[in-house]
Length: 386
Image (cartoon, rainbow, N blue to C red):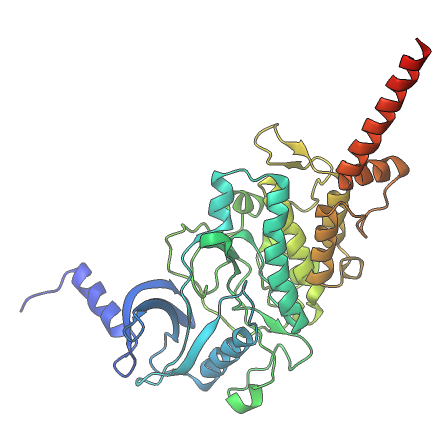
């Protein structure tokens, strides 16, 4: 008898665990991510000659509640048709009984990786943030909250494409209960679309696997280290009272409390404010974000001090009291747009000098003409006196 070595045994286990795609026009290319409930594969569609992402339950004998979770997750993604949210293509059941759905395969880099290598000008950073905020604002208009917004869940694709990824723990507001574990799909068609990982950033990603930044791990030493190439992730579960969902470095106070019923659109607003802090300063905010000392593109002691109106926007977005934050992502992005357009922002009351400088910046050409006119008049006055 010939004994199999560890490598051969591992290969056999992987082959046995692969989904049965015999009845589908897909061929598996690689594994993108794996977790307690599902596995995400990059597969090739033989009909169209393109690569797509396929998520499938990893249990060959799935429970009804697992299928229900998969269905709810797919429905919540399908309802978010926006350029900044990856579209869902199909959903079904494999020959072996496992549920699956397919999505666009996104090729790109996470914001974590991009910001680690380059310093963006402040205006470019804010325009990038607007694309993120607009996608989240669209979800909020559909009463969906993401609950895990962070740099690792933002993908920057080709030609300026920006995607908000990983809606695995998203929640539909005002429907169902977080502790609903009924396995009947029909009872969940309009129920709570809630999923939870632990508080360590380790739940199943839909299209990519990425780790927390080193700064975030340093700020939260209880987080397990994980390399970007890791595909071993803990399991998912339906959100229950006392479960903490999200990523600590970008988590609102109400998320840390372990009360999912307190999660709201303002919970995402807090995470967006923390994300903007990270994008500008290159590090996640600590328990008390030092906004006054934050500098744009800071490396060591270099960088430009962030203007006060922008500090006020972040301060309002990251207020400990959810009721003092922006009502939703749309209100936050509107203030960022006003700032970029040299208009007064709702989060900051400017003084007369700041208002004058803002108007000069907004109407540079008119200000230049007035200044030129005044100078010409002064010169002509002195010339006529000679």
